[in-house]
Image 1 (tube, rainbow, N blue to C red):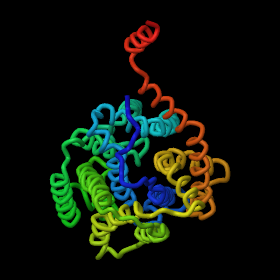
Image 2 (cartoon, rainbow, N blue to C red):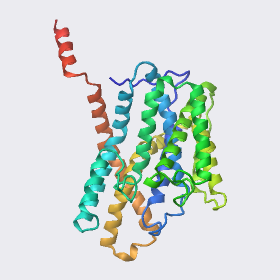
Image 3 (cartoon, rainbow, N blue to C red):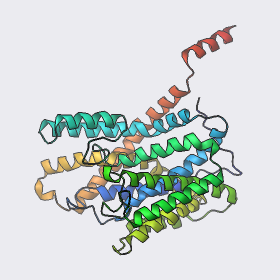
Image 4 (tube, one colour):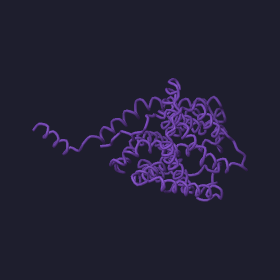
Length: 381
């Protein structure tokens, strides 16, 4: 049985501002990947630094999971229970995105654009939430952004395994060592860093898989440390949420020169994002803003995981209905693509993701049949 009571704190906090920040980061990534806003060989310059949103997600995840599960680990929650809870959260929408991508890949197979062996291998490993071993298109060729979810699950497993024993001294040492590793690796293009357009835009390919691991180890456990610092600080004030939102958007919208991009990316990842999560945790928005932020947070994961599969269909539909003259850069079709993904995500969140997760959670909570029979017999006796 998975308990759902978070660790008791000196005051209740729902972290609505963090939901809003997650939503803005997801929108930035969706705009970055939107078709018709960029040429075929390079992503859009809009939200040029939005690949760093992945590192922000990792920090945010570490904070939120530390808040939600640290107490449960101390009261007996197992790694298995924790990972089941995480898979219930992540897998339903991942599976939906996988099915959408698979239908597109099946069409490519039909027209000879990919071979049968590639299709089968990508599909088998994809449905298991594992990287495709022979892919040259990325760890998850059917849905490229899924690479960060894979590393998220790795960090989750480590956190679940050491959660009870992770004292603050070990946590500080871990974060410091990971920060030094990240600093050196990015600065000297080790571990696969420097293989894409941005200095830290790495982790989605096999050649940069260790870079992805370095990114998640630092950022996730930095988020755990930020939670402990926030909890110990006893801070009791409400920072205006516009400060955190503006700072995050400023980072993701930046376009540093090549000379300073390594420094910019490292500073944002090592210092700015942990600070933003801390400040966001101290922020309590007004009621109207809170509703907006809750909505943004609610669709953020769906927006992230569904964007690329849906963009594939949008591009195909536009090219085959209005003609090739709209296949280049177009603000209208780019905005329409983002709007379509947002609307689709809203519908899916309401009528698929939430009901499925609710049903799976109830199924996991249900006691085994033998225990249920014993309980029934006892109650009748």
